[in-house]
Length: 279
Image (cartoon, rainbow, N blue to C red):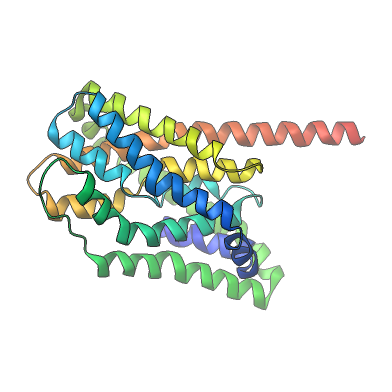
């Protein structure tokens, strides 16, 4: 929760509500984002789970994840730098809202078992409003009242978000490692294929702007583990589905971390090269 609040507050201190609305007006980009997250990734999940042999619980957990867009941790990787940050915030909100209604429906259609899929809607909406929407609005308000104050606060607030994300990863490392060990080789292979292929599809459909490509690649590959855990606990108790969801969430982080580091290094080299040419 600290990670979500600090990260969204930091975004609100850096960009304006008008900039976010302007991003939402790019209908082509938004439609491509929905296409890849709501249609293409679930289809990819069905194909991979049909080809790769795996236990039923592993298959159910993977299909739940591909049905759930809007991974909240994606914002940690997509909010780096001014470029692309407005699209990152817009994409997170759109996919988070869509996931509330689309995930149970998609899961019902995709899962190989006839188990009703339910979700604690009020709890999810509460998290969305309190820990994403409200901090962003507070950031917008501070920036509107005083751009100078917003500029001063943005760096320490963003740093708190990064530190809390790092702490979350460290504190859950043992649990994630156990989950990864429990799913077996076929499950791990299927997850890596899905994550990497989702990144490639998101990159391709991100359009001509490299920053939008980067945001969509990460936003597509980082699925909504929080919603999937809520569904797994309520609809599939006493199974290994929740373990599969945890393992999938562990696999999502390293590829996106490496991808983000690569993009940061590449941007710095490009900026340095431009400065040298200018000089």
